[in-house]
Image (cartoon, rainbow over all chains, first blue to last red; front, top):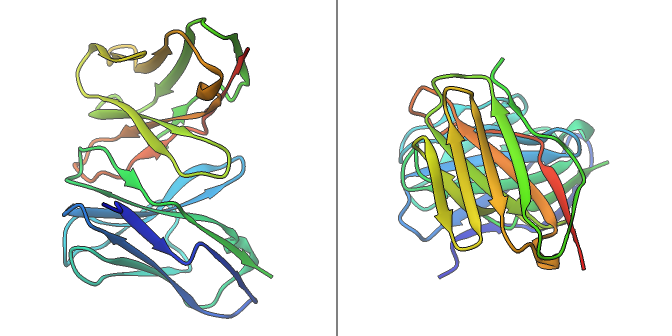
Length: 112
Length: 112
């Protein structure tokens, strides 16, 4: 049972390039989330999906888009990467909004 | 501005002692509360969650919630060097969304 799987684990991009971070969960969870974690800033919510077919903005959505492809998968896209988006990105999922969230291993993204 | 505050530490305790980690939150209507442990370079791992005032115990861990005073704490009994990590407090604000607000974390060092 893998839980929450994120790909890739590491990525280096140049400014202006685009890429998609993938997240899949096998726990039949309804809700999924994308966070970024920066030194001194803690974990901040980028986007979330309360259920299949819905997405909504979190605290820091600018520069990102998301797609809830199906119940299992929730992807995060950077259309034109900027150095300020260098961070560690975590995907999480939960049964519902008030239940504990379970995190993937993260994607370490560097933008030069 | 919704806030979750933690002392960044480091909090240093000897092996076998009780470690006490504290967290305060600003939004009085917050409904659910979570403690995560994060080792350096790893993803957050759920330790405890609590919804009601009072204490909740799980093994060596006890979560305490006081909604009137707007604080939640985590006690770790018989601390072990393997408990050395950063502990993140997360609060679910009103709105039934699961948009967790994280504190910046307290670094715990358990010295043999």
